Every structure is written in C-alpha cells, then in structure tokens.
Length: 456
Image 1 (spheres, rainbow, N blue to C red):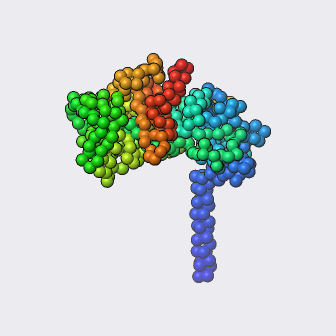
Image 2: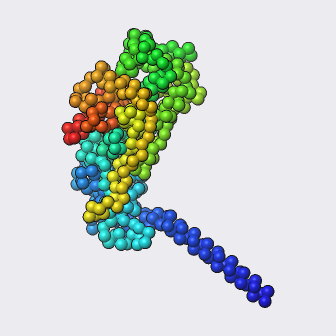
Image 3: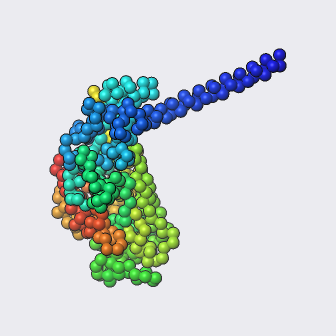
C-alpha cells in the first residue's frame, strides 16, 4: 500500500510539473509568439532577411513606398523617393528600426490563432504613415549631398510630415563602395532619431529659459560685449564685438560673451536642470523608436567650461528630433504632442485595424517661459535674420554654428516654428560640418518649409 501511495505522489508531481510546463509554454506563446513567427529565419515570409510577405507601406497621400509582388519586395518607382524614405522603411541587416522591422507582424497580418499563413494568403495589411514622401524627397535634395537630418511635425497633432537622414542610398541600386567610400559614412543610421550633435547656439534657448526663470530683472538688464567674456579662470570668445546689448538683443545676435556670463550667473546646477526639464536629456518613443538622449553634464565644470556649455559647446550634445519637439513645445505654450510617423494599420480594403496615433503630450517648459522664448525666437527672425527665408509664415527660429574641433567646419543648425494658426509646424535641421547656421541649415529649412507652406 505504501508503495502504491508513493507512486501516486510521484505521478501527481509529474502531472503537476507537466501542467506548469504547459502553462509556461502557452504563456510564452501568447506573449512572444509574434517574435517567433516573425523571426527572419522563417522562410515562409523572409528571403535573405528581406520581408517578402505582407501588405504595403503608404505615405500620407497614399503613395506606395514599398509592397510585395510575386514574392518580391518592391519599392517606389522614383529613386529620389526611395533615397528619402530609406531610413523610415529600413533595410534588414543594415538599417535597423525601420517600419519593415518594427511593424513586420502588422504588415504580414500575424495573429495568435492563425499565425502568418492565413494572413499571407490575404496579402497582409497596409501601414500608413504621416509622412509626405514628396516633401521628404525635397528635403533630401535640399541637403545637396551634405550629411545630417531634417524633421518637421505638426505640434498640435504630433504628426511628423518630413523625416530624412543623410547620406542615404537607393536600396534598388546599392552602391558597391558604400562600406569604403567616406561619402556614405553614417548611411546606416537614422540620424534624426538616433543622432547626437553639438548644439551650438541653439542651446542658448535653454540658457535663456533658465535666465528668465532665475534672474528677475533679466529683461531690464544691460550687458556689454567686448568680443569676449573673462570668466576668472579663462576666456569665452564671441563671434563679434557687439557693445551694449539687452538680453533680447544678445539672444537675437547670438552673443557668446553675454550668454557665457548668464550661464555663470545662474550656475551649473540650475542650467543642467533646465536642460533636463526641456527634454534635451530625455529619450522619447516615436512610433516604436526611442530617440537618442542628449548630454549636458556640468558636474565638474570650471567657470570657463560653464560659459562654453551655456552657449552650446563644452560637452553638450542634443538630438535633432528632441530639438524639434522643444520648438513645438515653445510654440504651443510649453506643451506638445509626442511626435509619431505611423498613422495606423489598415486592411487592404481600407478598414482601420490598429490606430497608431500618439495622443500623449509632454510639457517641456512652463507657460510663462514658453511665452518669453516665443518672443525671443520671433524677434530673432523679425529683427535680425529677416523674413526672407520664411515669407508669410510668421516664423520664430534660432540658428546654431557648432564648433566641433580640429580643422572641421562647424555643424550648421536651425530649429523653429510657425506661429500661424493654420500652419502649426515646427522643424529642426542639422547639417554636419555645414558652416554657418543661417546660410547652411537656414537655407534647407527655408526650402522645406516653403514647400510645405505652398501646399497647405
């Protein structure tokens, strides 16, 4: 009897272990089934790491960017569209984080019950983007062979309408020397999402916000620029001898001497905290991609280091998408929608299957500070740059000419936004080693925003 009882206990234990194992397998299948089904080794839907099953990827106007025909992945007929949208779509094994990777299950139509087979028979689903492919192509052409990134979004809705990274290449005619030719350095990286750059004078917007919040009489003050600022342990040089300036004039004319002085007056801790609050050091999820974090570490700065940090040099870095968001937040009273570039997943008949719009908001500056920055950026255009780049757009902007050391030309920056109610768009442009912010990034921003404005 004892033997039978012992055997029964063993059987019960084995049955219990089997049940636990079955539950774990079922749970793993439920939670990770799509990962197994969509593995690039699945020959039913991949060939040579290329997704050869599933529906189409469309731009906001219904233009087909990529689709599958006769078991082959095909792309838009236009080489300029293919180059401009390459980093958004991605290329398996080379450019990670594209729609073809992040939305592969939705494109194929995978579901937990039928897997991929039924979906494959139906042709999969469509993924529609918020991007305007033609605007992206114009932005890429405006870069004129230079490296960098451009982004534009509606700061009221969060829809990204333009996002390009340069250099790019034609996925149908991939250059044979892409891995050895310096002209293609960085071609595998979506720089708008993952890039980290020295911000130069665009960072004076952060320093200006910190000053407005911590120096009560900042707008009544008068400053003097002799061409440099003596910090006590070194010198921060200016780009000109500006003479007497108000705070607003110092921002408009991008005076290094005044902003190095302001950075030292507010102090390292407050300046670093301001950068953190304004999203410079944050990572944001943009249609399943996470933007690169900027870096502002002022923990061990001398007075000179702090002065350089306050004008966007020292060890400061920022991400282009995050800077676009900051511009949008300033325009929108301090709060902005988190951007997105995937609108939704649709059946081939056009029925919405999955809404991918991001309705989340982020407050980057308080309302009062946003109003101050809006005034500064607007007057920089009206009183200093002039309206010629952005006629009728009621644009507010700030450029940056970011020194990168050695004999290399500075990075060229511009970010800004329109104050027109019927044109609520913000942008950022970075050109690597592009020289003057105004004449480099400014001209690219002008071409892109004019094209968008003319088509509104």
